[in-house]
Image (spheres, rainbow, N blue to C red):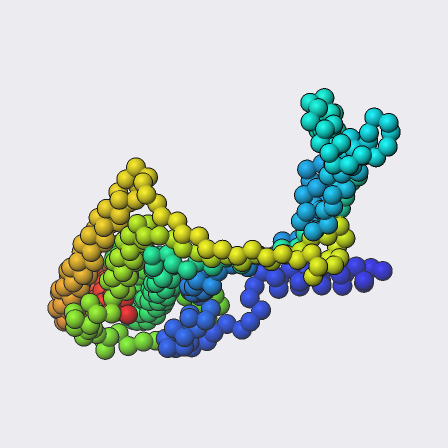
Length: 481
């Protein structure tokens, strides 16, 4: 019993642990190309955008479906003893009789009016003579037919099919279909924009990780140099050529570099977490991308041709133009046709063919006056079209300005990278020289630490500018793709 309890606890722990982690194996040495492909399949935001695209695509079918009209089937079951309802049920079922009007009572009174004073049956002249009497007329017409006013309760089952189809709507339905088609294109562009954003984020993450790994490698070299300097300082201290403050300065610098290494590794781990989030899957390691060959040579005309914000603005203009046409349709008649076929009986589907009926017709409707509402709405849509047209111009000019700004920033960053690489090489050479001079007793430890700080400063500046440069190049790609 005790072992069974232990095994149950272990099994529960295993299940709980498995529920908290991804059971699939993490990606190792994942290439950028593969990551971009996986994002289109696994990224949650792209999946949501794909749902929006499918919804908009179905909207086109919805708009197109209105052209084919509407067929409704109605089945109704009733029971009533209301005089009006019962008589109406019988009429609709084609089963009404004169008896339902109370003609049995009327015929009895009519027979009495035909009788002669001596009690024998008279002819029409006798009836005319008697009926000409106002009292006899009132007596005959005041008869209350019991079957008509107090009918027995009756069941009523009615099955009806009605088909309604628009014949002419002033091209309103056609324009709504075109609007729906443009909305579907808009949803597709929105999805492509999300894909471009995810591509931008994945590429940037790859370059960030590659840059951080290179930075960590350079920092590790610097740390090793400082470690060697520390060992040399310890030896000098033993021989009396170095003070305790010299050792503390070297240890302080070593601690500072180790802190920077820790930050670089923490940022790299965060970048891997973000990449795993983008791919909705754990990523263990990536294949580094080249930092030096990354460049941007996309001309402005291609950016303006491909940019999705411009395409969306142009689609918005097309949609607004169709809305103007829809408003114009209110000044034209709406023409529609309908056909109705059904059958009624006091039993479900009883004698359907004998009791069937049909109705068909055409209706035309034209609004004559509504206080100028339609005219003002039309003017509103026209003004909106002019507004959207200006927005398209603004989008083109805004994208062109943004492109030129980014290209200028990339050019400036290239010059800074080139300059900082030379400055870093010089700082490294100077540091090595001062390290050797320190070992020869020709320079103080303070001088060496200062040169080391200058080397780290140049390295950090280079890292910062390279990161800015890569991000700006990726922004150009995001504008064009």
